[in-house]
Length: 327
Image (cartoon, rainbow, N blue to C red; front, side):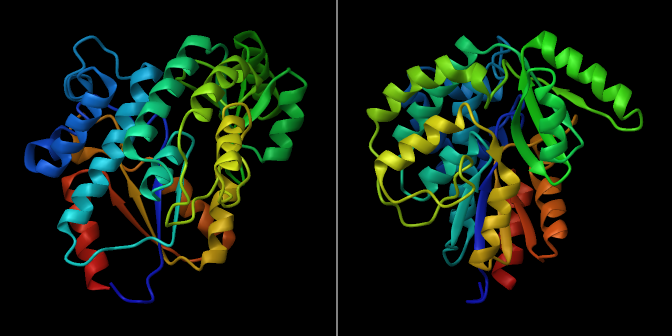
């Protein structure tokens, strides 16, 4: 890799899980099997069974989704590292919602074990106390906020200059969706498949209980800067501030747009997305990266050029390693 390359590693959030996730990697790479086996031992249940086969249709339950995604993201990274002739070192890491925890693990702010325990508890509480629903709207944050407040809903995620997700009680979201259709008949809002209105005040009970787990978890200085969803700035280099940012992330908007804009100051020229996958085709080889479209649209809006690579299955990992190695 050229000395001029400045890499940013990114990790997707909930919604990028699918039945069979990680099976391809574990069939061919011992380093991936080790990650999945370690995760099962830490959590006390067979995580691989749910990820690979999902006999009881559990992968979309938040309590299982979150640890499975973190595990898959780390497994993809380990295979990526194993196939690299020389080590790639990011100058920055970031994750979308759940993915922020993987970013902290990769930066050595959290151990893999602690990160996994955190997202397991986080997912359990979000599923347990989750209520309401979420709606993705093709509007700016300001326009969305104005409309949402009229229907007692809140901004939950800012993905793009003109894509904002809101959350609220089911009846309020339904009224908001109806109002949106009347105001913008040529635009389309999309309801998200979640167990509640994540990143809004409806997560307050979950956040308060999760705070106890955060307080019991060790946070370290780390060796790579990590962007915070809550502040859209770098995590401060102290445990108290890190815990507070992750606590706030449960009830405040994920500012992904702000995070990507903040990355420009690091003069990054390439992004690698690890783990997850979307698309109707069931095989891992046919999945598409979750964040690719959002990432490319944002940097285009910033008028800032980046090269984008994915590392979500065997083929994409091999291709990305080869491309980066040739630069």
